[in-house]
Image: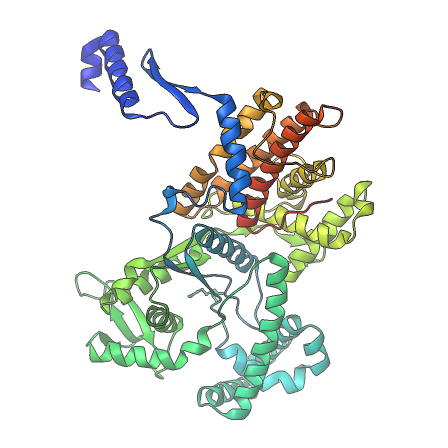
Length: 532
Ligand code: ARG
């Protein structure tokens, strides 16, 4: 700064010119940039537009779903073993909007990591242990129904849980028998275990159906129950290392730098049972041994930030260096997500609401009458709307959810992306592009084509940014701009009625735009539709 002001305007100018020249000297032309120079302190690039057109279109045609993903940019970031833990609902409790966010964000991160060549393990750390099973075990015979359980497992288990819970507040006998059931479970009583297993199995089956609607899946459902014994082993290990301190608040680990308990974590209750954090330590240690991962990513709402900080610290204190490879991706709260029936209790309610609202919006359009399965299409569009609305901002920010805004067909929404994708797809019915090597460049010299191609060229850079800080908003913004560019091109470039050479070239261009748009949507967890 000093030298700039000392040098005055002229000094500043020549400095900048010098720097521009230095920079330009380091840059090399490539297949698209035919000349690099400087003008008044700026670096200038001369683009060979025809070459740009040819290269980008050939590259996309050649790479297909791998376009932008197999570049050198990612060589350091790929070929690693990545664990992504997400969704993780609690059986018999509400599957709230936070679990929905965790599911779609975790799915995006897993898709992204996989797309650039990592081996990804998707884990659902189910809340499948704890007092809720004691209550269900004690009260299912009085409040539950086998038929209802089969017809609607998640809803029914939740209903029974709420009823037993309320009854237990008034009736100490029920409370005691719930505690007794949990003790039997913990002690491995076969009858208690088989009931628990039944509740768990049917819940997982149900979750899997919902995940499928959302385009998400898991490789492993090892939840908290899996780690109840392993937590005891961890406690023994901590004990043998002299890390446990008995206090009146239970048994704790000192996490403070000074060793004065100014920060600590309770890892064992006075009755010897483990806590949420203890099971998380056991799970992390087990995953280190089982998978020997290069990175592990936990996706939960930001209220658990402290929990994960403590977890990673405990792992470090235990001498587990893999703690440095663990990362928590926090997200903010969603306000105002209601359905017409009221507050959202189950994820299914949100998906059903998205589908029915979308079906209603589609009813007005002529083309939707010709769809084979309007309800399925409405669901895919509705989910795209949810995802785009959710991914637009910084993940850690809270946001207010608004159905009307999310489901608008124009503007920056998932509906708009689906609409653009379907529109580009319908063009392909006009004529099937021929040999991709050969097309008439002269029909692709419009500024709107060049702008779109330059945008397509940036796809890898956007993926790189997403990978750097695991935020989907870069890709969302990118795809929305691509959508707008594609719509301008669609309005400007004639296909029907132009010469067969021109039509062929333009269809090829649109096909490539559709490909990249579809690829990006899939990464976000959206299933692109071809008709709507
Ligand atoms: N089941 C927990 C909840 O609903 C989320 C679990 C997050 N993962 C973890 N490893 N603690 O809040």
